[in-house]
Image (cartoon, rainbow, N blue to C red; front, side, top):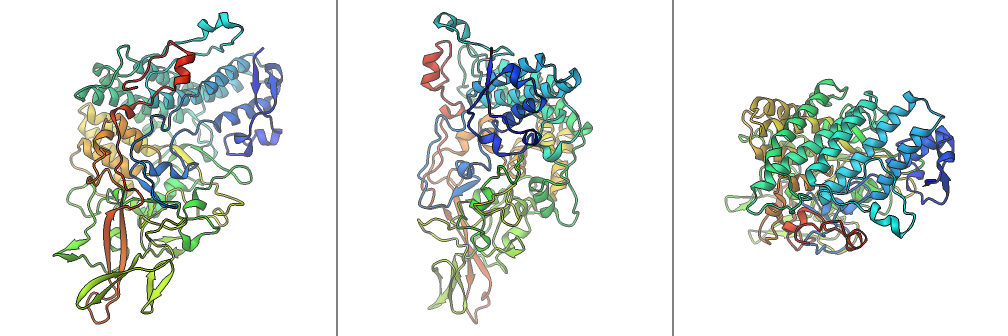
Amino acid sequence: MNKFKYIILSAVSALMLGSCNGFLDQTPDQIYTNDEMFGDANMIKSILANMYGRVTYGQSIFDDYSFTYIDEAAKCDGGPDYRSTFEDDLWRTYDYEFVRNVNQFLQGLKETKVLNDEEKKPLEGEVRFLRAWCYFNMCRSLGGVSLMGDSVYNYTSPASLPSLLKARSTEAATYDYIISECEAAASLLPSTIQTHSARANKWAAEMLEARAAIYAASLANYNNKMSNPIKTAGGEVGIPANLAEQYYKKALSVATDVISKSPYKLQDNYANNKAQNFYEATSIKDNNTEVIWARDCKYPGQTNGFTKDNLPKSVAEDIDNSYAGPTLNLVEQFEPIDTDTPGEGSKIVTIEDGTYKFYNSADSPFTNRDPRLWGSVIYPSASFKGSSIMLQAGQLVKENNNWVIKTGSLDSEENGYTLTSINGPLESNQQYINKTGFYFRKFMDETPSSATRGRGSEMWWPYFRISEAYMIASEAAFELGETEAALTNINAVRTRAGVKPLTTITFDNIVHENEVEFAFEGHRYYDMKRWRLADKVWNGNQNDEGARHRRLWPYRVVAPGDPHNGQWVFVEDFLFMSPNARYFKLQNYYNFFDNDWLNKNPKLVKNPYQ
């Protein structure tokens, strides 16, 4: 008889399904038979709660440094991060234990007598969706993988082993399976909004279906435009170019269905404060109309430490702060509101007429940019938790008619003015010091005590937002030559954001919009991979601004009698904390298969370059 290795909580805990309670991270220490597990409705819900807690793969707010691996943020904690290349197992997912547990669940659910058929349907839909999500994360990291269907395979003796080994399916077949499972799940799931989006509904299943389709389409399109397409002889890696159109059509159809029929809407609550609106659309759970599915957290139980670890020092609630900070690379992607080239990033001017560019305030270079910048990043003098966050690296003073930069220790003064702010930035190998000139705002929690070690934050981690449906629809329409639909969808997102609508659209506009809309949401790394741009942007060139982490440090002008006295200047540079350019090799487009997996299953095929 199949057995489940799960701890079972009380009925009350079981009803906290989908939230990050302590159960989700406990180590199993009891074994229950199918009859025991599926003879009690609350135990069935406990299993499902456990499954929701096991599928947070890749970048997330549960891993502070995960955003620093690419170009969105950089490590500030301690000394330099000498990372250059990307590991062959970075964010690799190979979770067949989870697949097996889903199949066991489906088997037990089918046989249980404690639920009627109508009660079983949404539970079946949820676990099939979660299994599809697991396969999606495996496929986007490894390519085609072994598809187990609904079978529960059991090892009985060495003679049974050959029947348990399955070859890899093709990359296309794997995406087809994910898409078909999402269709099936959507037909079983409710269409109503779930509390804090913690449990999957019909629209979460359709969002995964649309995302899988746009990934497959992109790979069929852009991989085959490489001079040497990345593929294996059996198609385990590499989707034929002639399949791109059907995947783009699928992505457009499903994304449009979510946009037109779901209860989710682009959140636009403050016509005169688009910045606050965007922060709330991503980071405030109550009355949220954008987030379709998320990993929720609840105190007491399980919380996360992202706020605690990354809070500005001036408003820190515990010893922790300033673990990482956004980069200038990201900040400059948020376009000026009055730009003549909408849909493109723009450099912050630091030099003018052979000398410093002088600004009237510390926030002047940022306040006239895409409001999503304020909603994503704390820049100098921006407000957070009711305070103005001072970021000041030092003073610019005049000595012998020459401009000279002076710096000090954190929270130092000179000439009656702040020399270096308590928040820095400062060049140092010490912990708890900002070194990029920016702090995170998105997913930072303003709730009192949320940044303490004893409590932590209830901030959620969104997997899908309605804006992604618009962006998928825009991209798919663009690739299909449906320009009007592409513009309509991308401009819906841009209008909610508070930037100029596009009158024409390019592929680069789509890349740009995804970068600023979904900063710190786990999209960029995989977007760069599916568009086959990662090796071009993170090219290992030490002199390339796109491949290096960059900083922007503010200095206050302290020069009594000079017309620039009281103004601000900024100095940009490569970040000393990241001395090496990011170098994405062709082999990094697909993770390597672990040797142990290959040894146990000789039917598996190695990935290219392995």
